[in-house]
Length: 291
Image 1 (tube, rainbow, N blue to C red):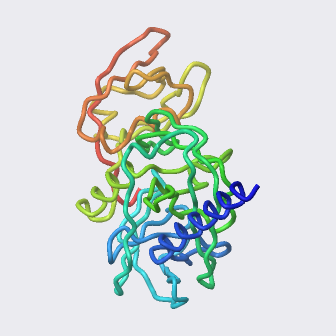
Image 2: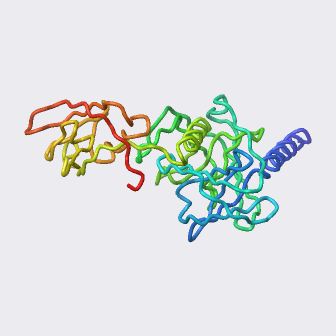
Image 3: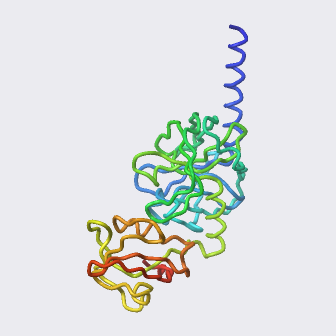
């Protein structure tokens, strides 16, 4: 019994030590009308948080010492639910874990802060790891990562860390209505690099069509003049049945294929026109920034 008690005490001390190690890099983020979120430093002047939590351009962060300061939005990508905040005073960046940290059953911790800067933590395991997938907004997520732990209010934007305090990913409830997921480190690093080199935004694919779901696909209700769809041969009344080799059941399936990687590339689109099958190759454009 003494040995078991000692092991539990050691585990408890190790978990608390990990939270304390991560804590200086975790902040509270205030930019919404109701419940705020959390974020964490990835560079001395950059904080990463969940994009869906930013309901205002006026953003404040609360640091580990309880001090509040203004932050500016340096970039955001709703399709992967990631946003970058720039601050004036340097913070403590957290270290990212490698791909080897994505193991089902691995013990993980979520570390967050409330609006007073007080620390909060939750412990669990990684319950599922899968392949790459696309969000309903067309964002490419490198791996499916589902943590099995309690993500309380304000935990969106918090880091999921391994037992050494390295960041596995960012926790969010903004990518699925049914479950909280973690955006993995590989996706974070790729999106952040793009945001910093593309003026704070991720290019999005654009066809220039109005769509509505029908049985067997999505019908084209409108085509913008001189748009990629117009130049590629799509016309009103076409029923899109597949795009990029993926079956289409509604407009969301089309939008999901129009990620940043498709801009400037020819995308195969299968349609039914007058009841007859037809294949078109349409070069995807970049969605105007104001859309």
